[in-house]
Amino acid sequence: MPLALDPVGRRRALRGLVAVLAGTGLLLWWLWPFGQQELRGTLVFSTGVRSGVYQRYGELLQQELATDVPGVDVRLVTSEGSQQNLERVANGQADFTVATADAVAKYQRDGKPGADRLRGVARLYDDYVQLVVPAVSKIQSTKDLRGRRVAVGQPGSGVRLISDRMLAAAKLDPERDVTAVPIGIDTMPAELEAGRIDAFFWSGGLPTSAVRGLSERFEIRLVPLGDLVPELQNAGSPTHYYRAAVMPQDAYARARNTSAVATLAVPNLLVTTDRTGAELTERFTRTVIDSRDRIGHEVHAAQLVDLRTAIYTEPLDLHEGARRYYRSVKP
Image (cartoon, rainbow, N blue to C red; front, side, top):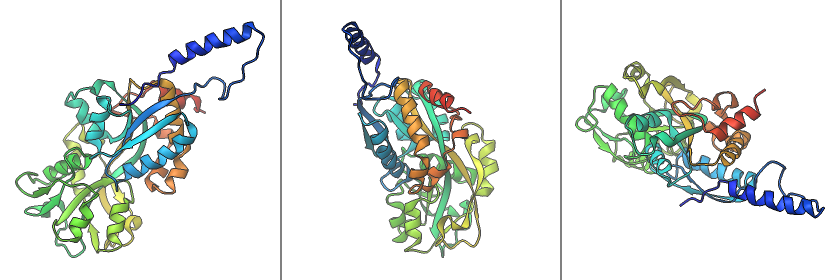
């Protein structure tokens, strides 16, 4: 279990020590910047499947935090995705995570345990929904998935949430009209390559390494999904977090698409709860923003983290610690 990192007790002890030293005429020199607390303890970051963007982003952020907050041991825990991530943070099994805005809205709407304690830290980057098929496949639209074997994501993933909605928007029943295969991006590419599935849905930053790797050894094509955006948006909350988007042709240069691919995108949010201390959250937020370019060299989607939009964490209220950071850097 993660340790509490509230520095209140430590501040009281330090005040007492300062008073004693001042009374004896001694000068105390701190080993950390004035006004900051020496945070110590362990925090748990729930990521995603091992070959997904969440996991790699978490690994790189862990390295940055080791420098910025050296007294805090950041531990990464893999997960099925957004839905499981939210459950872990809400019930105290994890301190921070990444989840899509539509998954957050569903968690709140369903009144899941701890939903009222969830807080936003930053809006990160958008996930792009991708429907991947073999290049020679006759599947040209989501409607063509009828009767096919389709990987739809693990039960606790954001992919599963979106794929079910995509199928419904195409007038397909996820339980009757397709053979739904509940696997994640760590196994989807190999299953498609081996012919054990006909297509798979994925929702992630561009490019996702697992999809790019597949495209380099097996001929694939991405199916346009833009025709489903109006139907999804008309469905109301939480689907109003989906927006029309375009995947550039060079997002996967080896894919057999001759032009950009119309699809939809959904924001990713960095999430914590009101249990997390304000100072820790403020410094965590600072690291996220300051490390954007360094992390972006390996996780290209992270290059889109923008200080101007990071504050917009709807449907979550902003954590007080994150608010402090954004106020401190406001022009």
